[in-house]
Amino acid sequence: MTTLPFQALDPDLFERARALLDDEWLARDADLAPVLPTVLARGVGQDWHKAGTFRHHLVGVARALALWRQPRDVRLLGLLHSVYGNAYVDLVKFDAASERGRLAALVGEGAEQLVYLFCTMSRTQFVQKVLAGEFEADGGLVLEKDGQPQRLSPYEVAAFTIVSMADAMEQWFSWQDDIFSRFPHVLQRPQTAHWAASLWPGPMRPSARMLHQIAALGLALQHPGLRGQLPLPPMFEQCTRPLAQADEAAATSLYWSVIQLDQPLVDLDAATAVLEQAVRHNPWVGEPQMVLAQLYLSARRPDDARRAAESALQAFSAWGNAWDKRVQWDAWIAWTRILLQSATTGTWPERLDRLNNVALRG
Image (tube, rainbow, N blue to C red; front, side, top):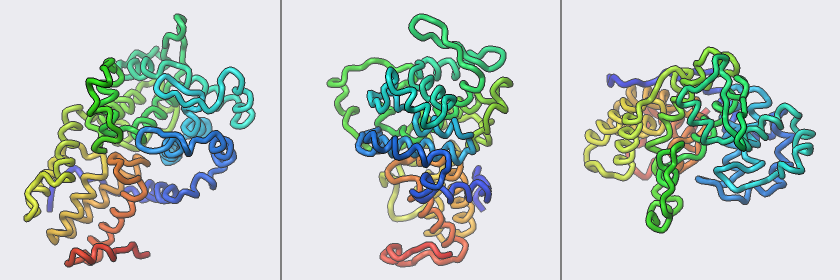
């Protein structure tokens, strides 16, 4: 039996994730569904955004917030968090000078105020101050806007921190590691001198820089003035565990070396050992554990495969978005469920071509 920091699968969390796997989940959400047609009418499904379209991004952020049981105004913020534009993206779907009333009539004044603040504050300054722990005693935070202090209430700080966590996880991959290197302290580098880094989408490697920052944002929610403002996201053991920057980088590199077949290809032992080490460095993402589960199945180690697959499902269910963005979150979950089913029933194909036939039963 392999000793690794696998997580037990929380049945309640997994069921919440399953309810969000189909595209229809948003249409069934009584709070978000009435807003979606207005958002779609602004062309968000046609706009490029990092690893997909702007619609894909907005829905992915809202999905994570729904999974994390955030209240209506925070979930609406997730769905609308960039519609007034912001310093990071030039997309403007509602004119803040003339359409705030229209959006407020659609979602309510409280939710619209959160969206407006989130879009117009300095997001960079916000993340810097949260990571530095520069809170007031009650958990509030003071930013600077147009040369004047801008105070955010503890509730706003908690909401913006949680949405920032979901926002970063949904979109960040290796392309942004390079073009936004050292975020939130980004250096201005000439594009032509770094043309190779600019080529979109690049190798689509998972981020080696962002996850430890998301963990740090989660830890900030443990501030006495912030804890209890909103439900804590489930990752990192309810936002109580850090992730070292070096561990994140090592785990990504080890995982990617297996994905790129930069390991011995005839026997499984080297690739398995490398992935096990990746999981030790970073046990909070599902993709390395999922690939490890398949290697265990190929090595006829069904018990280890079951534990790895269950832990991968727990991680996928906690995030609501993929870490490895080569395929979407729902596809990672679907294949992991196949692996878990095979580990449980002992039905993993012996022949390579039979992998084409596997299907989820029940």
